[in-house]
Length: 376
Image 1 (cartoon, rainbow, N blue to C red):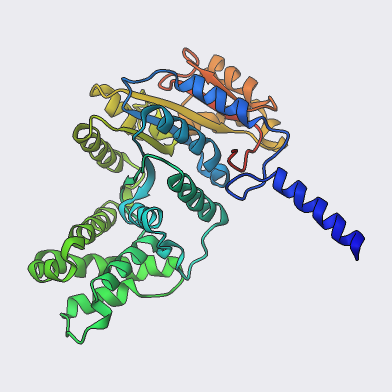
Image 2 (tube, rainbow, N blue to C red):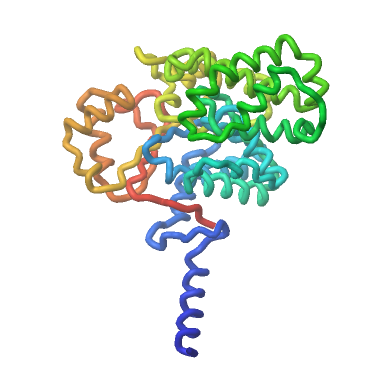
């Protein structure tokens, strides 16, 4: 028994030495300090830039947090007051901010399965928030085009805070329907299909015909309810065009309002790679970064590209060309050769000023090895 106990002690010591403050095990073969130093050098002295953009690939979401948090932490050290903008609708950012500020874990209280990477991402944000001298805010500038479970949770939580479920008041038919829709528990695809149109209709009644009553009911939280429902309305009206130009224009206008109204703050935004290119004016859409850049906003942006496995590294040049062209509208041979060379390496590295090969971004971050956790 004593031998087993001794080996257990050794194992625990090894775990402690290879685990960081977030409770996540570090990869000893990766030089986290070097990555952080590269990020510090990349950011340099950019006092003129108000918006920093980092692209992402949606097929590699499970490894999104590491680099994001390193950049975000360094920006906060340098500029003291930096807020985080993500590809979230308002309801999701509302729930995450509530969790960061109060520890209220409503965002995790759902019948739907939350992906492990998403839970760890939010919990890591909480650790950064608790250890940060300057408290930041998560800002969602997107629309809710899918009636997400976070929207249900947010509306349900606001109803609880307003005491809706603890009174004997007889509500209007519209509000009773509204309550039944935000409390429905079905598979997410069925919730979207069955409830979105009805919720759209009854919430319009609440906001237009019965506005005064519900202002009194929700009190100071009424504006939050209105914002969530407005996002739902936009999502419903634009559901056939949610990846198109209309959505991009809405995001652009919301970002402009934030930047103009808060000139002393800096913002770090994480969106899909296609959104962060400052010269992407193609058939599909003109990116919000392009629109902001054209209007004189100081934007510093970069792609984040992944090539983790052998299949990706061994991709034929034709397949690679088709893939890059589909994602980023890059088709000339020199640019493709430039990217292909870095994709075949087995290291993580940052390429500054990739022009003339790649236009519209200030850097490209190649992640050719997974870094699934934050370093100390």
